[in-house]
Length: 320
Image (cartoon, rainbow, N blue to C red; front, top):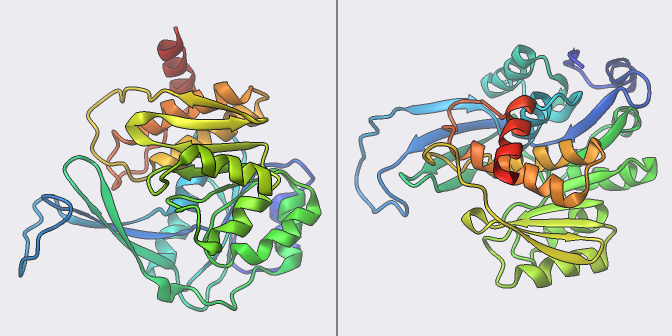
């Protein structure tokens, strides 16, 4: 799927999507631009100024973009839908998809393209500063456009950016399987709950959870998810599948860790690759652990997701 639609509308979306099943994964939302700053330490002590020898770099790539790149690299037919501004940041997003041959339906974003600043420490940890002015509560995806793309897809991955929450009822009505990533949800913030309860597969980070097992079980009990995965960095992940909780061990990175940005997206993309190939949840989670470890070895200034051949080869090595 390599077409790119610059203006919204059901006709354009239907033309890009084609017949049912023409798209393996529709990625909803999460398009934007990050400015990457490598800092000497985190938290960063106050000072009047710092010199950044590695440079300050701006590139396209937020959670939806990383998901689309990762899925595409694994051989899945991928399409991305979001509101994107007519601005320099939007030009970077459109160029990224065009250069990688990933389908993009870019609807006009009145508030501009989403952007953030990521401070990255020497150990690869990051602190993200999101520009919340780049979205409005009234932002919506046109229902006809959303429905046309969703019904042409085998699966829809929904990011938690505005306006994806308002899209959930339309997506549920199509019957297409859904996944979402709650990122660093604390288990309490009400903004995340509609996503947690609407998805069939839920990913989240355990970083802000005092009791990851309790949270993943609560998501499954209250919502429709048959699978919930809480990633825990070097401690691996918690996989809840059909009521059974399994600890997934971390995979040793194949090179030094330089940046954790995008590791969760890489995990989710590889998990969905396994799921759409018909693999059991445990193997899907191990695919995710392999891809997440690889992502930590790639600087965030480079968009180099793990390819399918490399994933399969590395998977064989770590499970031998």
